[in-house]
Length: 143
Image (cartoon, rainbow, N blue to C red):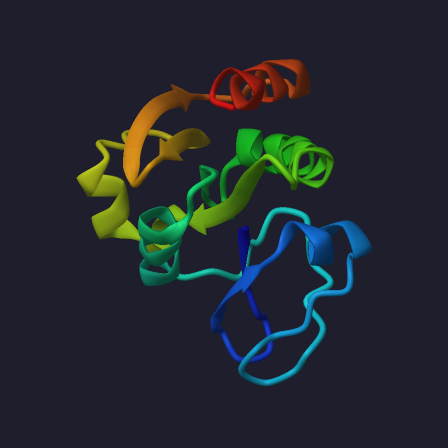
């Protein structure tokens, strides 16, 4: 099972692996197509917390800021790996300016920061800009 948020209504959807392979999941609340299998970036702090609590897969969180140059470089790398590894992990992006308590809770001092959660707990945290290979290797290491 994988979890994806509906951009239409904001509800968290549990999607079977079969539906993911078909790439035709539909929101259970509003029936909108969930066609964004890449990293979700329209997500709130409370939605990220809910995903971390509920997902049995690895959850990879990119903490970024709109004003951050390295974050702009990292964003397409994170999204690309998210598309390639969507069956192995949940990839979400969280704006630090809109998630101060989340950042404080996990000791984020700079952006970009990449956090890895498994079984509802933080298992690793990488600060700064990392490349595609490093991110993929980290995802593989926790699967």
